[in-house]
Length: 225
Image (cartoon, rainbow, N blue to C red):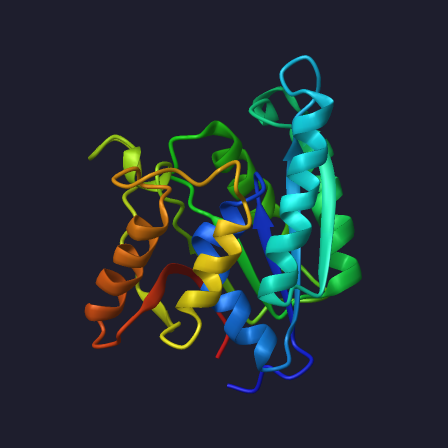
């Protein structure tokens, strides 16, 4: 697969979701010449988030994305943990404008079954964005997993994450972990899922299912061959 100059769009409901789910793939593909854009849909606002926390968040995003080789970071600045209060049309329009500008060949979106409502709303609007109803059509739309969100849904009630697409990140796992470590305010101590040890373990498990040393797993929603 030739990724040189390919446009890749990663839709992240919150900062750090993109690293948790797609960090290794972003590092690998950016290294192969792809232009990786991350759209962070939300941010904190006072009084829920202090000005100091907001400034730290932006600094951590910048550091993490520099490590991964992200080409562009787009901040849409909807309120975090309140996407269910945002008009669906407003989120659709914001994403569609970005999509029309970038015309991405590959799009990564959060999984519909994630327990966080922000993730569910992001998934819905991302699919609206990617509708093949004329104009540009992405070659692939892939849903990623986010630890502590994707795996905490209700079995047999909400969709389960059953991956059918894997990206070898054996040579980029350390870069992914370094990028997540840049989110110092979000890293937790093991055995918390959002620990460096747990992220490494997940990559190893996902890799072993397809005879790789480390991988990221996705659900292919649509692929154009």
